Image (cartoon, rainbow over all chains, first blue to last red; front, side, top):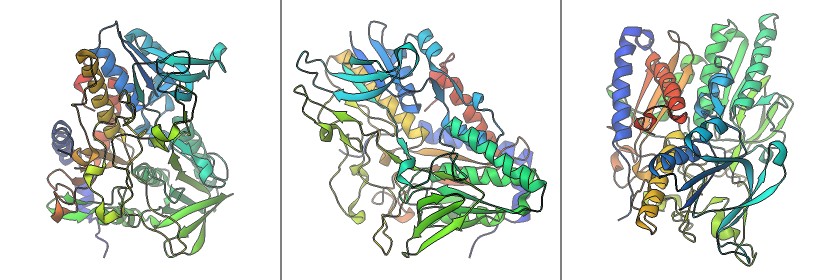
Length: 43
Length: 486
């Protein structure tokens, strides 16, 4: 069964105040992954 | 003094040139050869393709920037590789041909101490009969020029249906059985849908996704489990949810083989030969190597020492079944095993195999996505190659301490789902690692769920727009550009 995006979820997705908080949160989360670095996989 | 020759000025080539120039003294020469006169920020082409961003906003000319920064630049294309020199000199060189200006058509041998092949992919439209951007009602957004044409055609169609009772069909996805870059097509279909709504014609358009993916949300990365809010869902469920919400139909497991005027012919995994009509299509072509040739000092063809379609690097190319694939197969240093001073970051290296599970139709046709290599891994691999070359020059011998396998590297894919500061939307997906490590993360389909998550909303559009301005700033090498991570 395909999950649906409810009306309430739609409202949250377009609410500028909630999204501003999300913007900061996502930016930090992405930065953490980017700055988390990379490396090899073989010893 | 060393000469570092960089072939290509896309994300990988330009990133490598910028870091090399910044960290090496001026006595070392950094030289870029590219047939393109402009740098383009490819991820924003989807906005050009819907007419919400001008193409001038996604590119800038390379020559003035390189002149200012002390980076050599020749607008030319590669003719052949000569990693051992020739019978007159043992110095390695690449034969190039100028493609612009008074020197157009003139060939030159350019010697190097280190070579970075960042030539990216060839957009192999010719591998799908009839697929040629701007013909047969099919378009592309792979370059800003293609995207411009797509935008014009899309808006012509919108005007046509707005002023009539006509209904239209739009088809967006992959135009070859082994195409990659599903992410770009995914962004484009969502942006087109949003534009149709904005312009009041959504109810007159049947919008269909066509792709070689076995499941929606595969993205050439074998799909993923991701954290979504407080739950864990499959990427296929996330994309299904978005498509259902937007009223987008989908055809998957489809290998498009031929395009005629407004008709896409495809074969599906069940072995059925079908077709889909359209009034406008945007189909991503197959990517291939450029077909470069290489010769040794005696002019004997040694292409197979350098190329396997794309450039051979430190990957494990032995043939093995999907069940035996490991992250260790993927390269770490992007160094050619035959010539230690040649590297191929970004999209120029030959991947050891796909990431998605290979599938054949009942007729034996391979229908599955090729592995994607987006901007972030292209930039990261280019930087680590540049750092290894810098170390090698400083130490006086080849050093490859900097490593970055796609099996131990994350990626952020901020997919635009509609343009607009208040009405826009984006789907933010991060994944770690890019190539799933099923041994390290056996319970979560090869990915770290703390670093693999998805989110939908207006913030995603703002993020994508922020990245657009940040990476253009970085590419223009403005003050402190190097603080912006790849």
